[in-house]
Image 1: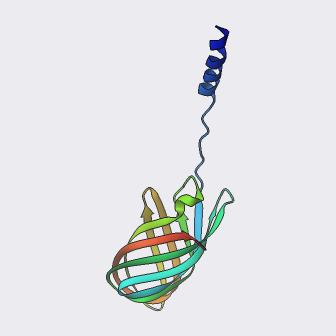
Image 2 (image 1 turned 120 degrees about the vertical axis):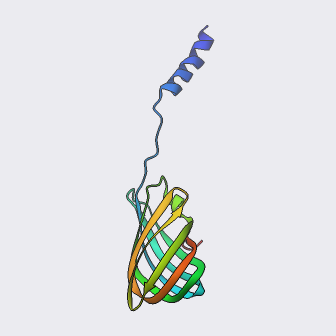
Length: 145
């Protein structure tokens, strides 16, 4: 009987222990991008993701897609706000994009891109001349990888 009590006591303690829940973190992206094209659009840039738990990561960014679009643009000191995630690494990958734009001279841009349940709201100011409608991807990679 004593032999059965010890394993039963351990099992009871394991079931009674509170489950550790991961806490959502909130992260932002500061970035610079430049690019353009006719029919096929490609922009590249770099940035830094910082999170409220102290994590940060340097990233490279690429946006590419196609549609009826012409022009070029340069965004300096852009800002992005991610929806809450469990880990900064969840933010790496490809996001779906759709955009319509028209502008010349100094330009501003606002766009929301999505990757599954993660959204990224992007804003930025810069220069360029663009017009059109395009669809594609916004890709975030850890810098140097």
